[in-house]
Length: 228
Length: 79
View (cartoon, each protein chain N blue to C red):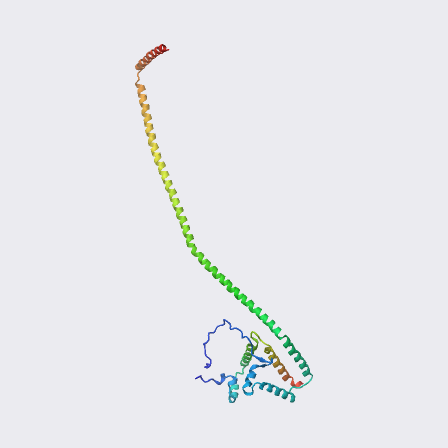
């Protein structure tokens, strides 16, 4: 059976945020009787109605001995007097103390909440900073790329130089070999010519050339003696 | 025009005097129902007078006064 009077799923059911506690409790007059009772009787009997009702009730209880007056009544009267006096005197202080306790609890909870919010806020800022840093990585990579390009260039040039040196060495070797060959040919030719010339000098020619030399020397020595 | 409210769901203050008998007969008198009614009453009193930011004296003093009256009624024959 459905309760047709009760609407279903109209409010947004949610456990949070919890609605705050009401500021003040229900009004109570003289610490014993809720205010609703006075309001209930007000239309018919005005302001004094409940008090008249209370007085009449009290007299009825006393006269009919429904409430018996004995030694306990005296004790109750004394105790009630003291209680009322104490409440009137120390009530506000106790209330202030209780309020202070409550305040401390609320303040500590609030402090925790504020701290948590603060931590989260700083975490957000840090995160943003990290994101900004991540953008800078692009520059870093550009610099690294430049470095690598330079390394490659240097390497390439070194090898180019090495190739040039090697080729030069080989060509120098060929040139030196040719020079050597020509020199050897020259020397060999000179030697061969000298050898042949010396061979061609016959013994006859040798005697004649030696006699001629002696005659020449004599002539020279004569001219030399004359000069001296 | 609001739909006619079942007698079962009316509050006690809205029940007419003639319907009181039938209204009382319709209430839930199972143990679970009684427990539920006690819990509801307790929650009403608690949330109205005690579970507030600035509770006053009336919250507990009414309970104590009720206890005094009840114990007097139970021990009346021994006086």
